[in-house]
Length: 392
Length: 191
Image 1 (tube, chains in turn brown, orange):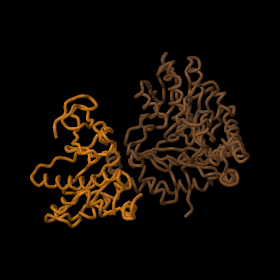
Image 2 (cartoon, helix red, strand yellow; image 1 turned 90 degrees about the horizontal axis):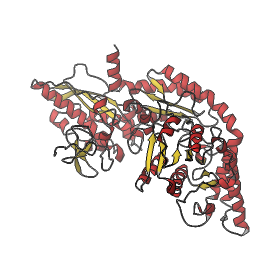
Image 3 (tube, chains in turn brown, purple; image 1 turned 180 degrees about the vertical axis):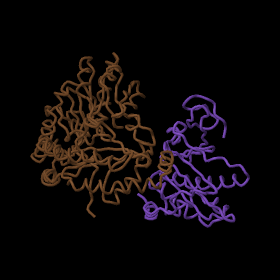
Image 4 (cartoon, helix red, strand yellow; image 1 turned 90 degrees about the vertical axis):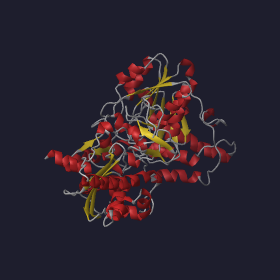
């Protein structure tokens, strides 16, 4: 059976061009970029090239791009590094309720070191109201972190607006663009943010390579101390092949951003229009229009997400869910709860996220197999039986 | 992640349904914690002549319900009461560690149905307890000290950190028994 992959938010396949670009850096160009000899300088050229390509994707200068190992590291570095470096000005942070754990947990752990964090709410679409951010600002506030787009519900946040009002108050802004980079246009100068995280594995690059944009002049302390790699802001021998892959993936994203969007949009919109039409009591989660072009997420009432995921998997379809049972912590998605969904509904979460090259017939296949799966699970659900009894 | 046997019971669950004329009904869990099971039993001459179930929950919860129903049919009430989470998990060839609490639910739901039958026999036919959304707190799904999933009820025990827990009478949160509620400070009773 051919697999049909609808789990972009978990991982994207590495593009063949990216693999080809990485290949020589495992072999003939194996040198350490910190070495002064030719082998080292060849590797350094690969590193510098990648940095330039990431900078080009974001409209940044190469020296403003710091290379890391994952989106989580980038987020940790931005939140902790900026907070600690700027604490003389204040010790208050503002984050949104739907941030990735790699932003929320560093903010939480900073509280043990005397920082205070305000978590701003979101509306039922998962959107932050910039006015709420403004209300949360105090003279002590040094950093606001609101994501570009949410991977669980696809909603795009008004980061530009938030950055504008923070700039007026001299507050630094970080945005976690891991889910957004490579899928929607991002220009750090236009957004006017001070820091931004991205990861290669969300745009057809390898895992193990990510980056943070840190605007020139913004103070940030390293998480990993040691040698003077990355200008002393991140020690450790660089993973050159992965970083070269990140660079090639960034260049591909620049080239293909519009084509990807044009390809994904009609498929996404077909899922959003058709699934709730073919199955009753299915709701779209996230914003209906301000959302990632490849992202269609739903909650199906009266059933649980893991059971749905397993049945879809047996039909060759890979998806994600934010249900408690699919998470390691056995807790339902904090994003869905922050949007005001009740627990039972949030348990029925299912996320379809498209990757490049998905044929339209794969979406047809989903639309065909989804309703009978839901029927089957509902027939077993005491909540569905109760709903039917109460309806008649 | 799951054994072949779990996947078999998940894909082809046995005894799904509702017994309209059940002699006993048991319901445990709630959608807040992720799983909810309702068991229906038909009793003939102290034996379980029929068992049906409905489950809202993950693959493990569905497989556990199916396995419990299969194990229970034909057994005497005493034999069925002896079915435990361990024997269910064992019959399924094991469950992932973080899904073991699902097997507790299955045996509990069956036992609740049998208890309901016994209660009805002595004329004490309490209706099945309905779980209302506002009564169930998400905090009550996990041990507050180590985050291990627990099942709430009268007797709660965290198997990971070996403490007795109680549901706070005021806010429904979970706290070590006999200590002030972690959430609202109200005194809790010693279990």
